[in-house]
Length: 318
Image (cartoon, rainbow, N blue to C red; front, side):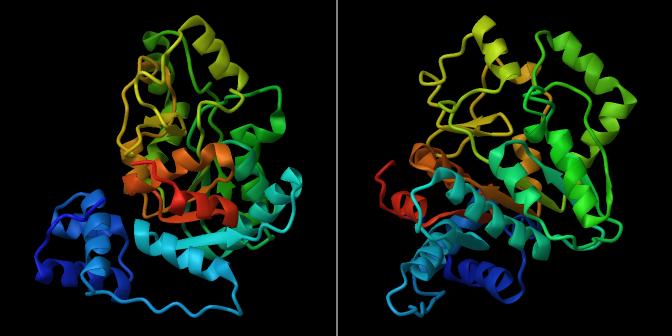
């Protein structure tokens, strides 16, 4: 996709704010009264036009550093963190990814931060690998209601509690399902003081950690039961993936679905406004979803496997 034409002075200004002053995409967007996606595109244009130049130092033929740099440059990421493809075991790959994510989370979360956690194998795995490093005056909150009460290990409330224990900080649980069957029910739940106080943190997040879903994964029970009674043709809607059940198309743009009014979750707008959004995801089946999410500008840090990174960069999905 060819970058749009922008004035050189503007590209230089944005490049300096991002690379010299360490401003996030959202901070730059707010300063210049433009969209976060525009900031991402302008940073890409600055690279294409040679305003920004990056030198990559290879490590004895090691491709990982090169892949990380290419992902960072192409999608305007703050960082791309890749794990080696040195095992065929799915479990071992999950562990390797979880350790890499945990290491980054330990360093990225600062004292006083409000941290939001999504649900799923990747997020739970990362939290389980966290070191016991106390984060003073921080707060951990779930950003989606319960989706699979039977597998309690992956319930977002359990993940949030474990993260708070490891970080030695406060946390709130969200006692609500991810999806209900009536809009009126959702409205009543969201009006409850205990629920609304937790949801109120979603617009105040400093860090957000989440996975990416493809809708071809095994659905959690609460969601699959809803869809059995209320089928949705996601292919017809051009849905390529979801983050916390915010659906997006091949370009990363939000897709409205009949399910939207029945969900209790963080909004895509709140995700995009978060200063540091960390996505942990990998696998052949998730390449298209990750690629689309990268285009949206919602991801600041991507943690994945080398093989997945290579497929994202090589795939002709546009």
